[in-house]
Image (cartoon, rainbow, N blue to C red; front, side, top):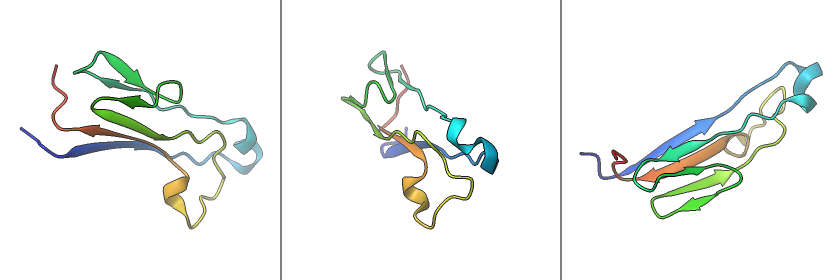
Length: 79
């Protein structure tokens, strides 16, 4: 049974002419709590939603960690 943390992230790179129209949203269920983490609900007892990226750049910056949406869950999440 895993005891650490699980990270889930999403990064996208649309074509340059489309970049201002693309907003991918990460929604992650937290099975132990029956809730979903997203930009609308950022915290739960066993998880946290870190970033909501509303506009992805066509060429991700050197600071790529701030270019992707990310959720982190604690321990095993089996319901």
